[in-house]
Length: 372
Image (cartoon, rainbow, N blue to C red):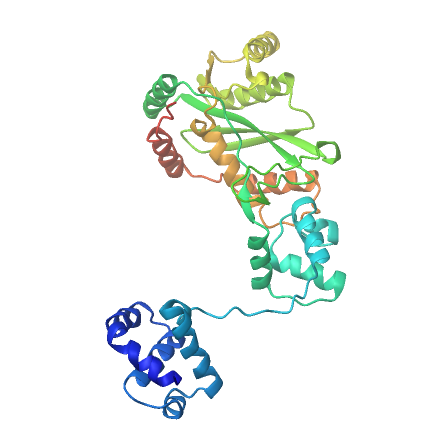
């Protein structure tokens, strides 16, 4: 039985299904196949359909045979294309290893984060093979890799303590003119930056090696006037209690010269910010008062709840300082050069004006308390 007669016998039972398939499949190549099948049902011969749809005889025969042997599913199935692999299996394994265990800086590229364009550059240098970025992203997906953010796991927080802290923070807007709330926090500058994102197997927590032994480190102490937005930064090679005491005492002396008499430091719960630091700061100020006449003042310390860095305004200022001073800079910058960039940036003005600081406090005060 010839092919056209077999197709016409199927027409009565499949015309309704054909209409449904035509509405569901709107791509041109799919509708061409459906229209060719309908033309055969309507009585046209294969030559007329070839001319109407502008296809070869062999192509039309392939479409019709697909429908006869597999129905609409086989007719509308897209034929797989076998592409020539530019990267052999061995080279693909090498590229995957480079993605997971190497950085672009290892191959002379001024970056620590892989992208398809940077990998394409390395492949061209290594094997003289030109491959598109789109194809590389297909390979990354085939290898089940994705770019993931490394998260820090904090311990359980006290929801009631957080709520009370937020309530007290709202009251700081009513401080007198001779009072100051100063947020203090520490941050680190490193010769090799921390990579917060890494390529890893999908839905896993990437483990990013710190390589601490080969990093030159410089610690920064940032103080922020929560009401006025003024900032001050000091750098030291180590983060110790004595350095924290030095920063607190110098900040107190600066504020006493400006006429402030009630000073409160807002700190996190780091070991260098504990009772020993508070006691030592008071002792050092008493020693200074024995040699220099200091005005009457009160000094107190206020700690954020445990595991709640989002409640410290200084954390947000540190992020702004990094964003404006250290993003998109050469990765070969030394820690001293990075410190100079930050000092020059703060010398031009605070990252946040007083209005922005008030909005930041409103944002922190409206933050949701994390409950467990």
